Length: 468
Image (cartoon, rainbow, N blue to C red):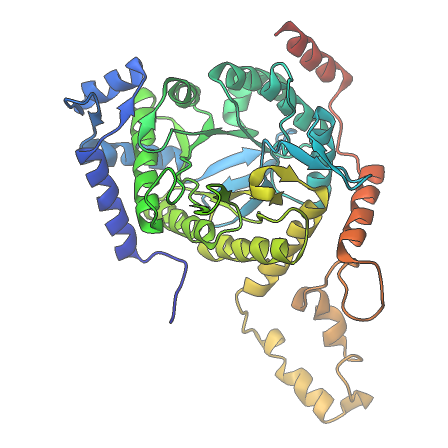
C-alpha cells in the first residue's frame, strides 16, 4: 500500500468532469430569483422540476473570471499589515465557531457558552500563535449574536477572522463593524481583514438567505467561502469520492453565480465533508474521512488555481485526552501534506459542541511539531556536516564530542524540534498533561494582552450595536 493524500492531475480532472456532469444533469435547486435569473440569462436551463441545469461552458467561463481575483488572496490584520496570503502554498490554521459548550478553565466544569468566553478563547488563540480566529462560542439568547461576537473578537486580537452568520442581516451588520474598524468600505476591500463563511444546503440547494450572503460578498468584492457541509452518508453519498464530487459541484455552482454578479468576486474553494456516525447519526469531527476530504479539496483547489478551505485539529473526545491527540494530529498532518490553504476548527471537541482552551494550546503545539516533521530536507554543505564529522572524529582542537562543537550550538534551534516546557519527556515526575495545560491557559489569561482598539473605536462599535 502506497497512498498519498494528494490528488494526481488525472484524479482531479476526473472529479471535475464528474462535478460538471452533476451540474448539467441534476442541476441546483435555487430559491433566489436574482441568482436564478443570472444563470438563465447566461444560458442555464430550468427543467420540469424547477431545477437550474448549469452547462459546463458556464463553469469554465466562471473559472476564467475567478482566477485573476482569487488565485492569491491577501488577508490583513486589524492594523492593515499582511497576515495570510491564501493560495501561495502556505497552510494557515485557526479555530472554529459556534460551540454551544465551554469547559471553564478555572473550574474544569462544562457549561453553556457566554460572550465572555469569546474573549477568553480568542486571547488564548492569539497568544499561542494561530493565524486567524473564529468565535469558538455561540451564547444562547443573545440579540444580534453574530455582530456582537465579531465585535468581541476584534477587541481581543488584531489577527484576521473568519466569520459566520445565521442570517444575511447579521452578516451585513458584521461587515458594518468591519468597515468601521478598517476606515471604510473601500479600505476594507483593499485590505480585507476577514473572510465570510457562506454555505449552500446540501444536496445541491441554494437557499434564499445563503444566496443573499453569496451575492452580497460578490458585489462588494470581499473574500468569502462557499463551502457546503456535504457529510458522507448524511447530506452526501456515503463514499468520500461521492461526497467530494457533490460538494465540488455545489462550490462550482456558487462560483458561477458569484462571477455572474461581479467578475471581481473573490472566493476560496472547498467544502466540509466528514462522516455521519451510523450508530448515533452525529457528524464525526475525528473521523479519518474528514482529513481525506480536506486533502481532496486542497487538490481540487490546486487544480483550479484557487486557495482551499480545510479542517484539522478537531476531535470527538470531550477533553484533551489520548483520543483527542490521535484524531487532532492525524488531521493536522493531512492538512499540511496536502497544502490546504485556510484550515479551521482547530481544537474543536465533542463533535463541534465544545471548546476547551487547553486544546487550543495543545493543537498549536501539534502544528509546530508537524511543520518540523514535514519540513523538506536541505542537503547543504552545512547540514551534511562532513567537516564537522571529520573534526570530531579526529578530535581536532581537542573537540571529541558534538555537544562541544560550535556547529551544534549554532544549529540546534533550527535543526531540532524544541518542545514547549509543558511536554513531558520522562525526565521528571510532574502533573498530568491536562493539569499542565490548565496552568498554561491561566498564565495566558493573566498576562497576555493584544493591542487594544482605541477608546473612540470601541465607543463607535458599542453605539452601533446598541442601535440594532
